[in-house]
Length: 120
Image 1 (cartoon, helix red, strand yellow):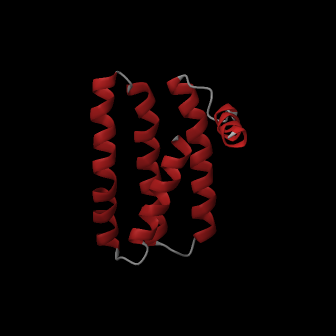
Image 2: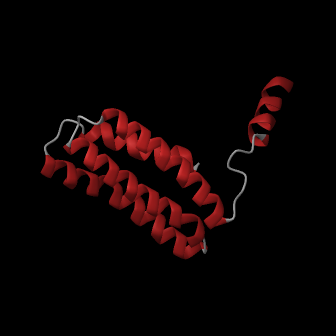
């Protein structure tokens, strides 16, 4: 879920702000990310899951900063995508170490889902 969240957050934000001016980009990125990150932070306090939410907060903000620098200087398109992939890879491994979850690449869920469809 973490990988999907980062990909959606970065690329949906990109498509929203790609043709905007510098001032509008900053304003739109704040309004795109603030409600989502605020909701994550508030729910983590009520569920005692702050260790799971910390990587979401950190890497979403880093993704927004990366996106801001890309949109303000669009000549570095390849660098943006490489940095986005590196950010996601580092985010996954830090998510596993901070939250203690080690089943990010566990395929058993997909195997069970496949078995349900095949056995019907």
